[in-house]
Image 1: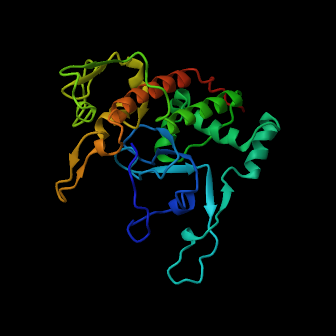
Image 2: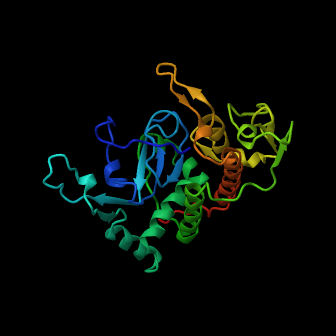
Image 3: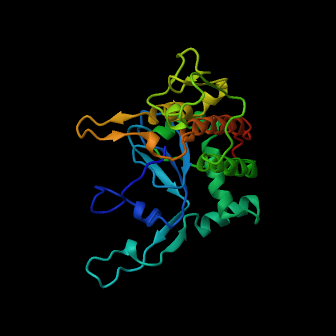
Length: 293
């Protein structure tokens, strides 16, 4: 779920390295976020191209691996200027030349730095990798072995990153059935307004009750296999896209205000089903974890 953030050193208690990763809105970047050490959540990795929430998985913390970092020039003479506001930033490739040469020595000169990055992302989705190194992933950062089918993992990682970053651009899952009851003249803004979605039951997650008028059914069981932390991607959407009010401040967080398109949330839900099904298919088709000695 995307939210607006007021990213400023005077308002944010701790921004860590984020000013070097996303220094300004016009500096594009991407990376993947993994569960933190000692987390109570299952190991997960997810690619994003915006500032990630520290509590990305709902609780505890995590580690973000950006494709690039930016080096800011010195701040100007103005007492109130900062390096973040300077005109130009130098983009630094986080895949070092030494790392590239190491992979090229094993897999050939055609390997690029992007290949190495996506290889890591693909490998981190391997069920065999997560099972074999489950204990290590709880107490240390992932160690990346070299496997026989480098290209297979790199291409899978590239497709996975494309799906996960561009989730709003994929096609809605075509096999879903959208059922609408009541007057056909209802204003779309009211018809597709969300208060709190829910699955039909714990035993039957093939149907989501979107609101009192709209239901989505025929959700494939395999879609729920795509997990981000302790929940499926679909369940994250159900949880996050609901109207909530903060008890202390009284501030209301209404996801219906995010877009002028009244169908945005229901179409997003359909797209997440597509992303989930395609992710499961790619992961199931990953090469064997044949680690080179």
